[in-house]
Length: 264
Image (cartoon, rainbow, N blue to C red):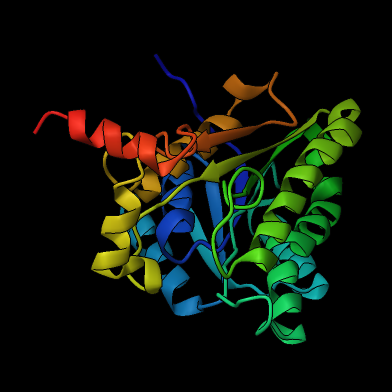
């Protein structure tokens, strides 16, 4: 079986320096795509691109900024490097934690630009290339915003809820051109830095996950690979929740009961 192959295709992955983005870029490259790694920290992206090339895979790295000019530049550089663009993955995102009373204008603008506004600029810039043969747009969304809430993240939740609205509306508009637009909604994916990486916070979150542990970047990457592949050619305007079942229970009490019954 030779499923989920991307041979002869070019892909642009934003936020590809580490974590989920690095995993997505790696899996797309392993599937045969030539992958452009766009990342705010160029060193991290270049290190991964070099590692992929050492394995005989096609990968390059470029700097990425989430404003309109940065999005357009990333698309242009990808097309110039690989001669086209068939897969656009907007994974760059982030949540600078802030309560509503402490949120400032700069943080709000940064969060909306990185998570939501760049969806528009990347898509607009990529349309001429994607329209040549039909293409795939995949966006990393989140369960936070579309499905659940987390303290000190209203700005991030609003941006991700907007991402899901973008996915549905863009999918409808671009379907006649043969372009699909879909997303992945990660739950809690283990991180190596930030407040969610702190052992006490990680343990508290994992207690709320029915499958009993945090996700790994590859759990999200394989869902993105499916949506980027020809096997997902009849899927558009959808998001796949990858969260270990975290959003299934109605309350923490339900999870407590499940954990008590979990085999040790």
